[in-house]
Amino acid sequence: MTRKTLDLFLSPINHKRQVIIIIVSSLLFIFMPQLPPSDWELNTVGLFENILNVYQNPSYVYPPWALIPLCLYRLIGPEGTRILSVIVIGVLCKQQQWSLIKFFTITLSPYFLATMTKSNIDIISYVLPIVLINEARNHRRFQFILQLIAFYLLLIKPQGAILLIPFLLMIIRIPVRKSLLLGIIILLLTVPISFLSNPPLILQWMNNIINPSPENKFYWSINNISVISKEYTFEVILVIFFIILILLGLVRKKVILWSQNHWISSLLFLSMIFSPYTSQQSFSSALAFIPSGLSFLYQIVIIVFLSYTDIYFKFLPIIIMSIFMVSLLTSKITISSYETEK
Image 1: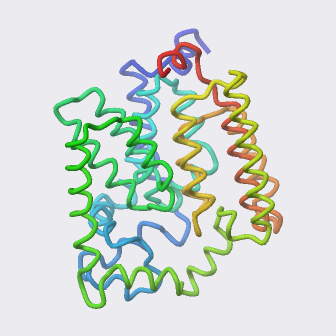
Image 2 (image 1 turned 120 degrees about the vertical axis):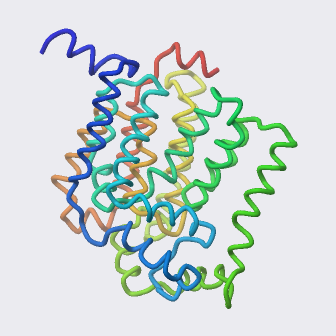
């Protein structure tokens, strides 16, 4: 391998050839094999034909305010969803001045590929908002619009963003008047649609969550990374509490350099594991902000040796937590970028 080729994959993403590689990689995901059930098909079929009656399908569990962005999800199709997801990761890597190696560490990781086999919306609903917020800093003219779209997208799957949203509001430091305007528009986008139909869509949605369909019960039982869904909930919460204390101590002593990406990833992850239900596909969004070669290899080992066993499904939250900790502790941040963020 020549020096130029090495530089192409190891240097920060800035050059046209690197961008072309990202675009070509995204197009290759058109051919990604799909595993049933397709998330795109489950959550978009019937939207245009009968949008106010979607909750008559007991398996439909996205909130009413997500119906509008889900219509766009329907329009771009499963192939478009996969292409956009990969491009979002590429833009994130460019914003962070990461290399193509890190890009492929994310997009070829087992949990990202699992997300793509379902044409899942998670990368769009969790990673794209952060990309838009980062981009808003450089585009004052469209800053407010980008921020509005970002927070609206985070509400598609609110269970994974409940801790992240307050953090983002804090670091963005939106002026009071703009914050009020942002809040009013978000309310207009979420509240009126929730009370359409009879009974109101929001009640129909809550009923589908409280009384899940047999299909949802099955998938939630085998695909849930939430710790509160297991019999060992209390023990895991204690472990998480002590891990947080240890991490805070290590960060305070600067044994670990803690970046904004660490915060974003950690808050996403904590929101996910403490929500009633979060799929393994959602986990790929939290990992996207802390890419790590060691974590990439660890994920492969887990999938190859454990994913088909009862142990994997019984202790899924603990296994997911171990992967997250490996990523969190081995994702590198340069001292220069750390000082810049400070």
